[in-house]
Length: 301
Length: 301
Image (tube, rainbow over all chains, first blue to last red; front, side):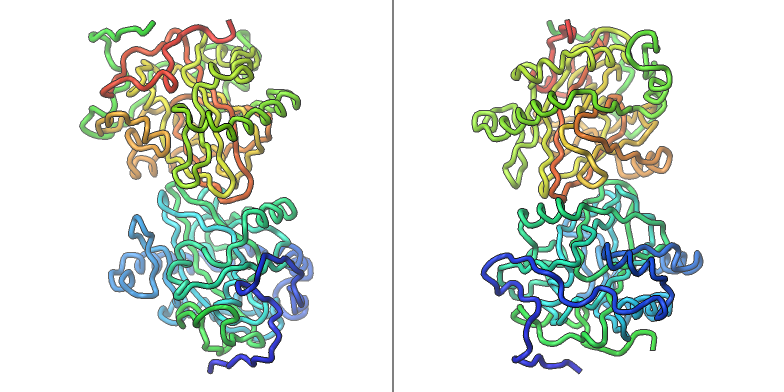
């Protein structure tokens, strides 16, 4: 049920096919719902609006955590999974880094991805039913976990997947403790209210490279320095079982992990059904279905 | 005035020319002096004894900080310095990473390296006069700063430079703010009381490679995991102008720095004159004088 983009539609967030970097205000709200619409109170929603992220303590039970951890271990050691096209391995160590589309291929992940604890929160922020645009399990192994440079997810999802607006968010369920020192998520709080339009064409099959190291769509060091000076950097630490919810347009990154403590999570991207993917705005072709879903069936339904 | 090692001397810290990894207790004290012997009180000395490090707030004045920062900038941009054998550049970006022997080649560094604020503290901990075994300026540039894996400095200084015992310490004067997110020093607190004997011969001219990425003398992942589980990891943050003092046998490392905030310091290694370098204990030859000094003239004299 792919929707074809109307060529008369105005692109609110031009990028890549642009002559130079331009920073402009986000169009439309960050938070669409209010405290009456879901489990989160007004204060928490305001925090999300201001900072672009929030942390929910222990969103899953200890038993669910143990089950997910065991499933992760099983998948990382499974030869078929490792050989699958939807699995990304570390270039050097050949260890599993990410497994995509797990909300469809794995019953345990499917269940949690459609659980009201996640879906109701996504709906409350996005003000509508939501569908899963992307899902993955991430492993950042001890000793070998590599860094990921600064980027806005929305910039990629707009250019390469055709999401019209940043009416999407990610929920990361932490499956290991995230310390300041094992390559946690870093966010420039408030950066989600600005959009950075980045010049540079999207290469063919860019996703193969960009899953390993962000390339196209990465802002210049000059722009990132200005952003860091303006917004600062928040380091998002948390315990296994916590969830981090963050806006699709946050400027975020992570450092390497030379510690022995691995860092793993289940990562789910919810997009508003009113913001369903159209044709890519700035890419030679659509990314594969396992990275950018065009199944707009509402989650939790 | 190199001392020749007596072949009858017993090696208290065998490493590299050993059949397997072995962990054993440190021989001798960590702190040789007491509160009466210098500027640090008993509580601070106990902290150093227990953890293997301490942080001194604002050990230099704002004016001295500004002078050192300006000098660092000048040196990093100087073509002669960049081409010098004593300068290490980042493999990819070709930016300056370290400049060695600056306590001899640079008047500003020489002055601070011999300043009583540093020398008296080193003497208080090491219980004797001290000389400078090594000095360097370190740059960890924003966006490009690479990680450094876990190691004990003493293990290298013993094997490759001939320091008989871990009666040495490092003082790092921070020239930029060190946050949790820009690749700060990480230490396993308490690890300095154990010595890890690591198998594997030292390659010829190992220093050329080891300055860029630690190789020989690096403990196994298994041993490091046991250590991290036992001791945990402390992240040493601080403000520009602060000093970090840490024991030569601390297990330490640092992650990469993808943030725009660079991380620079002046790094000075003080060794007890009663622990002066002899012949290397486990290396084909001595490292160059600019990395491992055999000028045992007491600092501050």
